[in-house]
Length: 286
Image (cartoon, rainbow, N blue to C red; front, side):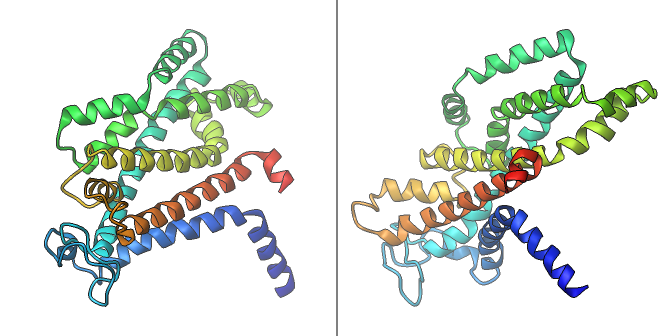
């Protein structure tokens, strides 16, 4: 029995190794921000917490920036902010996109045609340009507002992807059998379509979170993101403003790059692992 359990455990690790590896990396980044706040006070991430532009030392493990902020504290409190924006925008965008895609794919006919045309038109609009314009017009932007702005321009891709999946699933035999048995449209959607779409939606959610974090970091780097709370993008903004690269202040710009690389690598591996679950062809290859 023990040998059989170990064999199953090893088979599971081999099948879901990408998903597990990605989840570990994302968890480490998340814990860095959450657990770190238990040991590093928020005051260390404020202006004047230490002497400006000091390299790493026993007092400040990652040194200080030009305004005296402790870089380690800035990253500890800034990482959850960027993650929060990504999660809110990803969940909101995928939820709206999934609902629109479900309605279009299942209803078909004129409803599907109208939704498809609207989505195709919106996809031709450059999202980054709209984000920059809206963020610059709003002036001071909160974390929640930034997340909703990004989500409002990111639901179209999930809608298009879910629609294509529903168009395929609705023609399968078990859906036809459910219709012949008198099942309502709501029961078919909730009981038949959604369970089959969950792995696919999970993969889309991870991708949406990754895209939202990237958008928030980009906007904050341009000075268009939340300025009242630390974030990874805001760290880059101040580093660029004060010429950290030219002044060779590596402790200021290199650590946030490392965090972003680890985070995006973890999200990418998770997305690939979920794709293997959602796509039987990829799963068979693995």
